[in-house]
Image 1 (tube, rainbow, N blue to C red):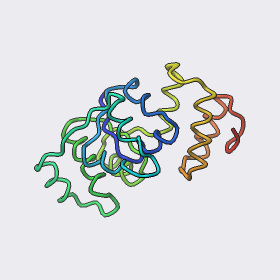
Image 2: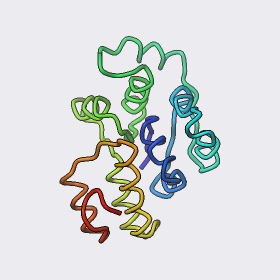
Image 3: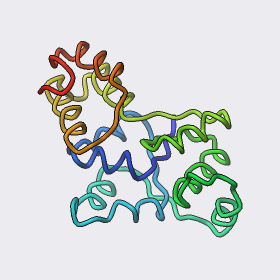
Length: 167
């Protein structure tokens, strides 16, 4: 399994110091222009963490840029279009937090994963302790990350965190 990540999911994992889990779940890549979106003063070490984690940084080719620019998808940023086109061309699984990108993948029959999947897999494989995963969920809620309440309830029960919104 090879994942191609969008920026939002990397930013979310950066908030909880969970970047290093991704390469343990499968080969993970990020496009260089997408990685640039992760450069922000609120997370000054995020890009370095991504590079150090073993996530491969893939340079965007001129052809990919042209293809992404010609893609008709109003709600997608250029970076999301690049991620989508790259996944379509290379048979990657899109790792995304943005609903429009996930919707576009679903429409095109491209497999995608998100934050819920990371928590489930990290738990199933014993990569991260349940108490730490509960902290991740609580942290994401506190920074305004929208996750489906039904799925959160299920994860809180699985991990024995308590109720949604509580640590």
